[in-house]
Structures are given as C-alpha cells and as structure tokens.
Length: 162
Image (tube, rainbow, N blue to C red; front, top):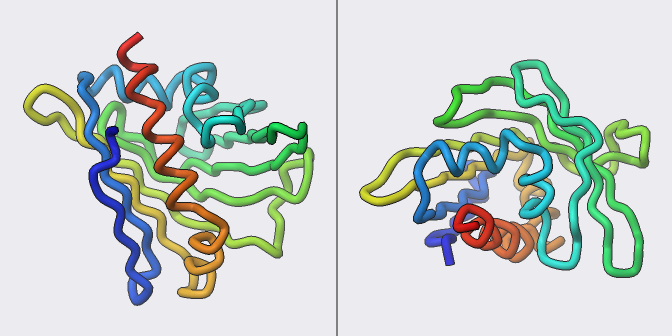
C-alpha cells in the first residue's frame, strides 16, 4: 500500500497524504500527465473517473466526472496553476454543479499541491489540500475524503507496475 501517512490540521486547514511508490519519478508523473492513466486511479474503486478535458498546463482546466456503481455521475474540475514536470503541480480542485462543470457554490474548493520526489528505489508523493476554512476541511473529511483518497492512491501501484 503506497499511502504511508495521512494528517489533517484544522488550524492550517490542510489535509496531507504521503505515498511511496516503487516506480521512477517519470513513471509516477505519467499517471497524472495522461488522462487515460489518470482515469484508472482517480476515484476509489467502483467509482471510475472520466476526464472530459485534460490540460496539465498553467491555466489549463481538467473537467471530469466519477460514476457510481448505480450510474450516478459526480462532476468536478481542476484549474491548473503551476506545472513543474516531473516534480509536481498545483491546482484548484472543486465540485461542479453538473455536466457544465460550473463550480458548485454549496461545496468547498481547495488549493492542491502535488509534489513528487525521487527516493531510494522509487518516488515519494506528497499531496496537500488547503481549504478556505476549517469548516470546509471538516466537510470533506465528513464526506470520506481520507478514505476515498487513500483507496484511489493505493490503485497507482498496480498501474505503474503494468
């Protein structure tokens, strides 16, 4: 299991997940750079993602939806701020109201910082989500963000091994 640590800090309004992969840095980067690979691991098992738009460039947008086992679609988006291939990228992550991918004002948006570093024999990924308020952080924690993210990230091992 690649996830080695999960921390949330209410005062800092952050959720930090650390994962170690037995794969080179460039291979882990490709998971995020290629929408078809990202679809295989973005979202917990049973909730496959479909990326409608995938622009991993500064100012780019990634629109996607996850489909539940019952066929319900959950829409979301990323607005990419920075890209430092292959060591990381930052983006704003939000829930969308519907297939228009317009932000859902009822749901929190977060600032995401994904950093990748070479380790002895692999890659360490550090995923940091920062929310506007402690209430926003608590809302996503209550929705199962830790469990869902951990299940999703743990799928990356099989993908990079194939």
